[in-house]
Length: 421
Ligand SMILES: N[C@@H](CCC(=O)N[C@@H](CS)C(=O)NCC(=O)O)C(=O)O
Image (cartoon, rainbow, N blue to C red):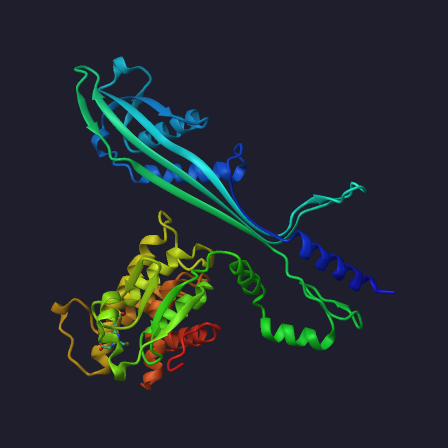
């Protein structure tokens, strides 16, 4: 007689064998609270891209047009924003200097879903309903707002100004991941947390996960999403391509390594120069996109893999500081460190500070850490951290203690860059 656990395993196998499905669908639904938040965020971001200066200090009357049920809310929201920008609004066009026609040509939220698992179905004859069992489910919600203002003079009726369309986007994704692990029934133990396991398998799992359960679940999530299949990283283990590889691995990306042999000048062949005209590594090819310069690769991947959460999104308050640190890394830190290691006297006219000053800046940005954005590890840590990791490998005397501790923390990450591998 099969045990209960075996029976349930049989049921799973039978269901998977017959009912497993992968589906992709886009739906439009009445506004859920997620969609409401997405709309408001997209609207805020579109407004942040609008130039209110032509209307500052003026008295305006607003007519708002939108092909959407959310138009009344959007009108009030827009009017409040105008007022916060120092624009006076009045209800009647007679009392206004300008008449603003505001077109919300797009204001909506979409939802896309991909599903891997057993869909809900009714067992024939018995009528028993088996509920949906997701092994993996990825729901992507996206908000979009586009706004354009056309202004006329209320006295003369003359057309005064038309703004360019300002757009805002927002996103919210959620995943369901079911991890099935089968162990023997003997010596079961309940541990706070997640697992029911036997003693020795528990030790093995705990050792390999070591507090990274969330990361483990994320790996499963990526399994069914776009992990960049088909991307190619042109690579040599003795080059800056190891930093690009670190970023790809932190993203959970799927990619192919194309080895480049420097001794055979493979990075100067006509084919490679079509990918990177500078004839250097790293270079990344993603479909029709060819990306060269390490910083560009990190920026590209940070945006391509929003699930990996390695970059503040466009429109987020931290985005500006993030971009600054990304660029600072190659335009100041790298050449300043190069000067120091090669004992070259830096010239301020060349656009970067001397290494000690750069270290002051980075220590200041790091603060109490552990990363440049506090607890949040981002691509900026890969950019800046990789330089100090590389410096340590160069074999120079230890850096300032705070920077050394930062390097230790970064090297403890499983995906951290490995020179020579
Ligand atoms: N700023 C470039 C530097 C690229 C670079 O200098 N790469 C070196 C390897 S670390 C290279 O390909 N050197 C070979 C050569 O220039 O011939 C980047 O970050 O991508």
